[in-house]
Every structure is written in C-alpha cells, then in structure tokens.
Image: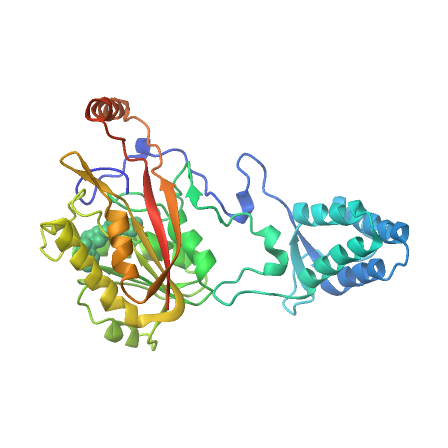
Length: 394
Ligand SMILES: C[S@@+](CC[C@H](N)C(=O)[O-])C[C@H]1O[C@@H](n2cnc3c(N)ncnc32)[C@H](O)[C@@H]1O
C-alpha cells in the first residue's frame, strides 16, 4: 500500500515503472537473459553419474565429469543420448537448469579428494532421481539451488511492481503481486486453497490462477469486488482452478458455508491485507476496518476477522498478514506490531517478520520534497516500509 487516497483510481501508466515480470525462473537475474533449461534423459544421466561414482581414482572420476560437462556446455555435441529434445509424460526425462548443473559439475571437478567428489556426485544424482519436500510446498530440497526466484531474506527491496496480464494497479491500497506469489510458492502446493479476507482488486486471486492454486476472496465493497472478478476472469486459467470473490464482512461471513460450496472444510493459506486503519478510507460502510473510530476499535475488528477464519485454516499452515504503520498527530502508531499481537494472542506462532520497501513511483517529486521538509521540521521519518508477518497455526 503506497499512497493516500480513496478506493478506486484511474489507471495512470505514467505512475508505474516499465514492467517485466520479476522473480520468475525465466528472468531470475535482472538484466540477464533467461537461464536455459535442459531436458535430460533421467536414466542416461544417472548412468553417467553412476559411472563417475564407481571410479576408484579421482582422475578417472574427473574425466567422466569433464565428458558430461562438455555435453552440457554444448548439447549439440551429445553422442551419449543424455540430452533430449523435449520432456516426455512418462517421467523418463528431467528438466534441469543448465547454469546450476554446470556449477555443480564444477564443484565436483574442484573437489580435492575422491570421497568429497563422490559425495557431490551422489548428491547430484539424488536430485535427479528423487524429490524431497516439506509437504507444504513443492520445493524439491534436493535441487534447492534452482529456486533462486524464491526470496528467503527478511528484507525485501523490490524495485518494480509486476503489472503484467490482469495486474493493472488500478486500486489504491493494493499490494504488489510478488507478495502473494512468494507466499504461495513457499507455503502452498498446486491445487491448495487460499483465502484472502480483504481481497480488494483481486491481486491474490490473479496469482492463484498463475500458480494453479484455488483462490477465494472476501471483499466488503460490491463494486470493487465486481471489477476484481472481471479482472481475475480475464487472467488465463490454465490449471482449471476455482477463483471466487464473495461480497461480505470478513468478521461475520459464514466461512463454513462458503467452503462447503466447493466441497472443502478448510484452506491451506490465509492472506490478510487489511486497511492500515484510516490512512486510506475505502468505503462509507461502518463495517469497513478503515472506518473504525479508534485504533483500539480497529484492532478489535481485525481480531474478529482472525477469529472468524482461524477454525478453517489447516493446522500447521500459514497466515500471512501484510500491514504498515501510521502517524497520528505526530505520533508513530505501530499498527503492524499491534496487529501482530492480535494474531499471537490467538492460536498462532510467529514465524517471520519481513520488512518490505514501498516501491518508488515516478513524478511525485513535489510531494516527496514536501514530506522531506515535514520530516526535517517535525523530527520524524518518512514511511518507506511495511511488514509481511508470517504465522503458523498451532
Ligand atoms: C488494503 S485493501 C486490500 C488490497 C488487496 N490486497 C489488493 O491487492 O487489491 C483492504 C480491502 O479490505 C476491504 N475491507 C475493509 N473492511 C472489510 C471487511 N470488514 N470485510 C471485508 N473486506 C473489508 C476494503 O474494501 C479494501 O478493499
């Protein structure tokens, strides 16, 4: 959430940076070309690694790995039928990141002892043949190096918003799509169910479609819900998932009834991006958290939403809270930490706090200068961050 305003805004392309989709595998490192993937014959690849592993001298092992490396460097030279043209449906092929594979082979070549080299070979072979996940996502831990699109640091400086496809950035107070995307990659599997209790412009549901997760959103404002629905529907649904936006008050809506429509009784991820109290007034409705008359009342309403959804989040699964702080009459009000405490007072364990920057927008120089002047004069700091707080249901 970046700007003060009220509800919907006209889309102004000048306000956003040029956008290419960020943090996807295809474009992991900014400014570089997509790292190429190779389709490998699982059996042949494994046989070559076995051959290396059975060497009794380091020099012989290195020769096998050098032979393999030359093929990976120049796939056209492959006379050993290790590289395939395309993946097959029977699982006889495996897709690997070429750059990562080359670095793993180099690591083997650099090993100083045969035991160490064999250890690396075994590890590479295990990643080709097997899968190890922690069951709440699909990250194959045996090939963890390939997931460099997934952020694991607690400080996020994201320079650009993803405005590709249906992400039009038309709604004041929306969050950037990278937030739900990262959360779903870490905390859900294909086909899981995600509930967003303040769905706004549908950012979460658009990402759900892209990643093959079912998404249900609740939104108080019927007009916003309608526009979000149209946008979500305009996003291709290649995985055939459910995307539904229900109009209602997240504090009181009958969630059991909502889920029953899809034959489920729980969800695997809850995302909450409530109003940051009154810094953006979303509607005139008293049930809207942005109209809470005091911070205490806001926290009470927020707690009621947590109470309403908690019974329907699977045990051991994640609740994600995205929230920022605010100033009132020269005093910093730590809304983020207050809300965090509301969640922790319930059946949750705090897992992480991520600090994320507000992305820079163009053409706001005058406003920036005004805020800088006010900060210098008033002895405060200008907000440049918000929080993504992660909790696990006990
Ligand atoms: C910060 S915005 C969420 C933006 C959303 N993440 C997006 O990317 O568009 C908060 C939303 O919560 C909605 N809201 C406020 N009170 C609500 C309530 N009691 N129940 C459901 N939605 C509510 C507001 O109308 C607003 O759209």
